[in-house]
Image (cartoon, rainbow, N blue to C red; front, side, top):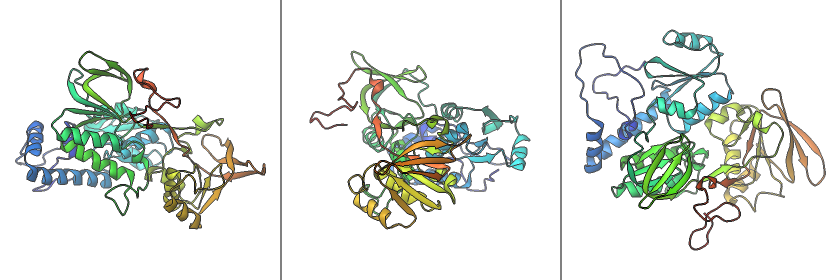
Length: 424
């Protein structure tokens, strides 16, 4: 419980998007409450820059504090490593939704929570405001429960529909919304796209000291919201329809949204290795991103990263701070041809990281979760077993263009070229 004192406020950045408050309040004594309608607040921010600067800064800071405190009315209860729990934690963390995690092994914590709500005896549960309990929800069901479903009014005709909320999509939303256009951004996973999963980005304009992907995505989201853009996640576009005077996008919950223009910034999906039991071990020792959430499972253990690009290099530098030893597995003879020089040089010089060349994973072993993997050296034929509970697969990605349904011409690899022929 958070005690709100004199001159405190309960508003935060979600108010600017029409979201519900994260937690309910109870007045313990006689008090005065000033209520500012959300439409009035958004109009004020859009028209008075001096007020906008103060409110946006305060609201954004409050969201950060709620994240640090683990407060905000959302509690996720489950077993460490459970797939449903992991997906919910990933969504909440990447979406900067304040939350608290309670492991079912924490009997006192579970018992204390059960006093206020009908908590199920097993599985993953989510407790939201007013002690409402969701049992094994999907990220979308969680988002809807928190009032993050921002496309409920599907009859609205937007000026611009942006598919994808990575840096490109957020930038487009900011520019369009700043010109007073009605903008809806549709994101299939979480705000930030692939960049949002990066532990550290050092070559992004304006951040000479570097910035983690989640923070970069959050700043972009706040800026887009400031100008009135609406962002909905997780919700995927499934088809594109061309109408006489507008476009329609069907979503994966069978709704449709309409826009006068569509901007495609739908990014990529991670490539997977053709290995037996790969799917069974996903979120149970196999991961595709390296954030603070995944780093918890690397403490004091051996970590294996497959891939030779910048994402793999950034993950190696980040995870080596937690792991006992970090291996980077590549099929080629080194990193210099596939990774930025500043990263590859750091990795080669770091004694905590070992690069294994001409190697591939040929077997995954474990009971319910990953326990060992076997590497094969393609030059010597030698096999090597590594005891690990954390394998990160970062071997590139393929474009998210299948949903376009033939409405655009794509190249042989599924990318759509611009007029100059450059692959997008």
